[in-house]
Length: 344
Image (tube, rainbow, N blue to C red; front, side, top):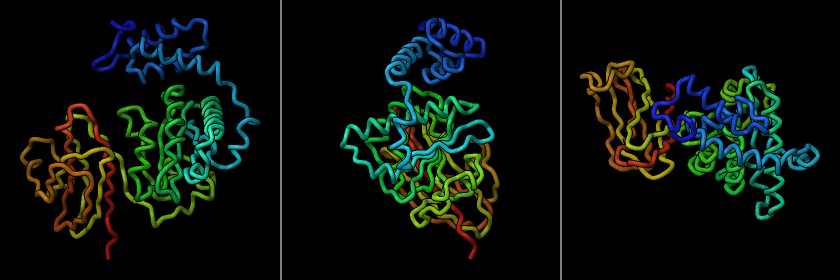
């Protein structure tokens, strides 16, 4: 079996994990590889020791070639405000602010600009990883006033961080959520390993941002307190539908309450079903009679985006079902917004 244990079909137990960690560290006796470092590389490689060893070897070579990065070197970039290291929160996570609008002002056709901004990113990553208790960060992506992100920079940014700082991203908070969200999400999905879309959260209020980062409103920059609300998409979330699978999101509605909803598939299409389960305040186990008593509102075979409004005539559950069973290899990311309207 590859690298002691190979690839685990159901995940290694604690004892097997310890064996993997010790074997990986044993391959780098002349390097300072901590248990925590070994675990991060193993996790991103599915606990395959050989795969983790290849990745770690490349990272160690990259570190010898590119570190250290000094403040004097990156100061011109940092002082433009394109990125900022905020305080660590009480849980021990660093908070990293990335300003897309300012990044869009950079002339990325100049190689020197790309080099300088990637060096600044590495400086921040090194500082935060060594400074905070958890060694991880929450990335706050300031989307204020943008329609499309700086694709060229974000691709290179993600490439460097994924290869050399696996497992360091604790959560990515996009704030405020722009209505032109699909292009933004596509750029930032490359920052996330497959299957980790749950790390993405869409926020539309300063209060939510404070709560999610774990920082007080006074610890957050003033520029975040007054986002361009008219272009913000509220109540959005990112759903990842695995290949060959179906997933659902539910929303309880009381009698007479209305909800505005919309969704967009980031890539390609899915089958979509919208139903209402009257008289229920929770969804039953699939296959039961109650679970099947759904009033079908919409049933679309292949759809990329859709929007609508629904008013409940009785208490019940509004159920959004996204079916990706026709795709054998590709998972689908769906951005769903579901917001109750204020009573008139």
